[in-house]
Image 1 (cartoon, rainbow, N blue to C red):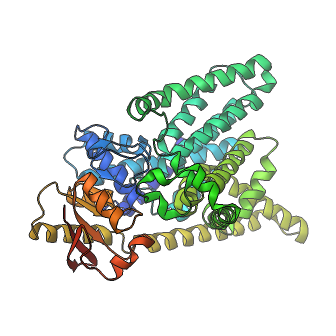
Image 2 (image 1 turned 180 degrees about the vertical axis):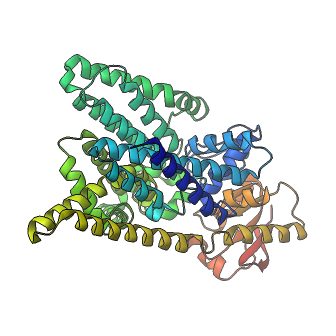
Image 3 (image 1 turned 180 degrees about the horizontal axis):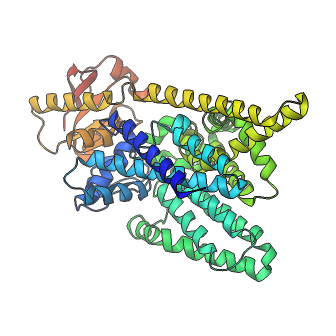
Length: 515
């Protein structure tokens, strides 16, 4: 594949993602708002700190607090570099531009991966086009989130696997470093370390036993160099190298408990007491949701079988296909059995992005196999059939792209606009600068208003009042999206102990905290 083709794919992808970003005047949802707020504070010289709490799993002591204790820092760091380099441009637009560059780079890496797997420049170009259109990921690649980074890192990882197969030596440090960067992008990126450890033992085998052990050592060194400083930072601040509240997330019994207060209620004993019927129901719900994501999102509906066919045909000659399938299987199991609530509510959608370069790369192979099989069956010329099937696949990919964009971009800014309007009302009601608000989406509220915010807890009214007192919150904003224990207060707002109902405004019920 020529550099001209790669450059064309890069420029087209960058321009397309900038166009999508132009229709996103705000971060749009909690994850993106969190990463962007972290990037803005980093670029502004405030370091890894935050003035929002979106969960209470780590029993935070107050605001400000160390940032990125649950969500990982790489997205914020990459965006912050751009914001720092272009201080004369609106920070959000710079951050989106950086993510557009990352997405464009992932398209190029996908094309290179396809070229490496197939040796066919035409199939590599087609894979790049599929990656450019991006299916259901199209609205989210320019968002300030980990999607594009995870795609890029996953593609680079599999490209490195294809290069290192059958070799020992220091080249394996690259895969270790990529596994470390995956971990810095998403906490479940740690699964890629397990994958590369197994891959090192397997793929370096032709070079001998010592080479296998050496490959594992180089992998470990690469991981430590990439992720080690952050893990040490966490150990020093939180007493654990990983997420300080991640252990408690294992013992959730429903999704709302991600926001439970106090989080000390989440224990192994409580989880065991719930019994197999609850566990099986939760795992079953996650299995159904994740299978749907696998078939519709990652499988691109009708293109999924072609990807499986193409990957299967390459499995013996291209170890990267097996490694990618192993990584996907690990991710699916983790997001179904270990983190069923996070997985079913978007975690698997996020995590699966790392394997999409492989999906895009093997779909053209499946198309070629389909055309060949049809030719053998009907005796038709293969080339026109291949062109016809390719055109159909591209039309389907374009339809998925447009459907995803239309579904996601309509109303993208509605929550941000609501928060700006309500905060102006709070100021009119006497809210002072810096007074903390309890709200459903604290990162978005902070981004839009500059006001510290903490999340509405999964607690009853007494627990809510206790939380407000502990963290010094002065205002509560409720809508219909509340945990079950607060549903009555949201349905019939009124004075309750510790809270005075003020008014309902712009779709939110405003309460004043009474110390």
